[in-house]
Length: 188
Image 1: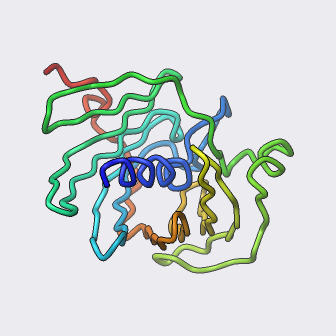
Image 2 (image 1 turned 90 degrees about the vertical axis):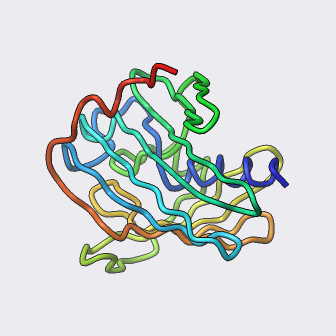
């Protein structure tokens, strides 16, 4: 069960967080934060993402309780690396930056690889969003998603993976400076 949760979380990070691909801007906003509510397997998960440098530096903090397991974790992306942080166990795992989608700079290669298609426009949290459909394959599984994107930020993502439907929606968005200390690795 933990492997399923880990795989689902990894696939969601790819489709929701939309990590950088060496593009100068991931978001059309220099800095800010957004809160996302995700419904997965009957559970509500709340995550807050803080970003700077047009999204090239960001921290997503997530707290959840699922199937009797409490998780307090973070994903820090900066300097071309990704750090998985387990605040509960006081562990940090460094990983190379993962290849994913930058909606501000959709290359022909990205469009082909993920089968990205524009599906129209939808309003989410008062923002007019472009809707994209895409497919992400990882560890032998394929996730089909629709992402409603505003200024490069996935405001709503609906993902079908491993027989489950997961919806993540931005419920709060604040533009403006973010405390730089958020982007420092914790010293456990």
